[in-house]
Structure formats: structure tokens, C-alpha cells
Image (cartoon, rainbow, N blue to C red; front, side, top):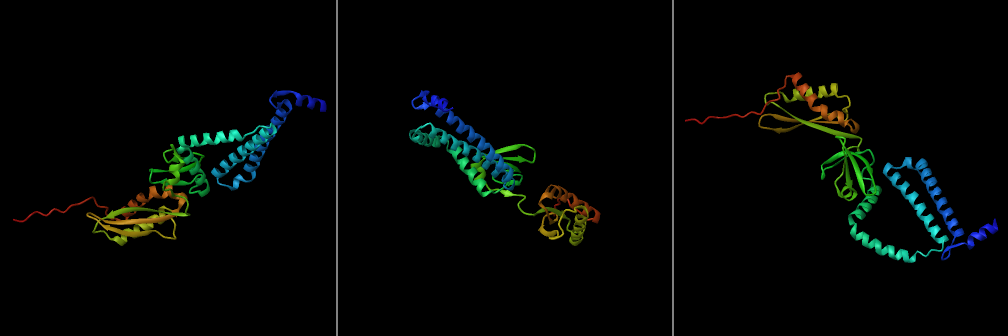
Length: 273
């Protein structure tokens, strides 16, 4: 065995590179790849479940490629390769590429900041008023983020724009408030209308919270009606049920109580001679 290894060390490929050193380098790289996969698997099994999905996904990639990079450095060291010149050339090349791809670098850095700050998590329903986008956050990637809108389409947003945009979370709080405005005629009894609406909400919308109880504001004495604003609180996951049903419940309550919802009206006075 010793003679065999000695023979391999004497077989020069180029310069100081021998068959033996190349074999050792190959073993180092193979061990590094195996270790990278093992560490990534252990991370995903024991630590990833306790982390946000996006963070766990990117940390897994960092661990995997980090170990491979270290293995490559160990490989080059075993071959006696001097990387100083390559590092200098790489630095100059990186500066040139950096100027040419400023948006890519900006998106990368913004993605890192988003992963650290966590303004929203995977599965959160968010709204971005500046862009007119509302939907479910699918993931925050290295360069861009993906949001699934309520119509089922998926929109990709560069991380730079995502990081600098106003983000409104629709699920961060335990409860949310829904509201609707309805107009009743001036001859109708306001308290009767409010009592009827409150009773119908309790009977037809069991997911509306009792505390805080529904609130009613006389919002405006409009041209044709007295406008009442109805505000109800509910668990944030029930938004899809409360908001579409609220106006129907109000209409049914006013019809049952005989409260008129007037059409727009105008009073015209004729000039006297």
C-alpha cells in the first residue's frame, strides 16, 4: 500500500500537482459535499420547524453552500494552489459587476434585511397600498418575494420595492374590525334601526365578537338620508365571512323592522310670481 501511494505521489500531472494530491483533494470535496447534506438535513429536522419558513429555507442554503465553499478552500490548500492573485482579480471583477448589477445587489441586501426584520411571515395576508396589491405572502426569496392575490394569480415583487413599501398586515392582530355604512330615511326611528341591526347581527353572524360589542355611529346627515356606520369586531381569520355578509344582514334587519332605505331625493321649490 505504501509503495502504491508512493507511486501515485511520483506521478506528476502538471507542475506540483500529482495523482495522489488530486486524489486527496477529491476525497476532501466528496467528504465536504456529504457533510453539507448531512448538516442541512439535521438543521431542517431539528431547528427549521421552530423558525419562520423563509428564514429556515435560506439558512439551509447558507449552511449547505458554506460547507461546500470551505471544502473547496481545503481542496485548493491541499493542492498548494495560491489564491492571492485570484482573490485580487475577483475583487476587481466584483466591483465591475457591482456597478453593472446595482439592482440585483440592492435586491439581495433588501432580502437579507427582510429576513432579519420579518415585517410579514409566510402565509400572512398582507396589503401593499402603494402598489395596490393584497394577498397571501408565499415566500421572501433571495432577490424577490411572491404574493398570491385573492384571484389566484401570483405576483413577484423585487425585494428592494418590497422592503421600502408600506406593508399592512391583515393577520398580525388577534381581532379585526369590519364596517359598513347604510342610509335610512329622515322619518325613520334611528334607535329602532340600530336595535334591529344589532339583533340581526347577533342572530345571523355568530363569529362577530360580543366584547367589544358592535358599535353604531351617526356619520352624516346627508342630502337624502341619515347615514349610520356599523362597526363590528371579529377574529381575523373570519374576515372572509364577515365583510361580505355584513351589508346583507343590515339590509335584512331594516326590511324586517320596516325602516326605509331611501333613494336619492331632491326637493324643488318653484319661484313665486
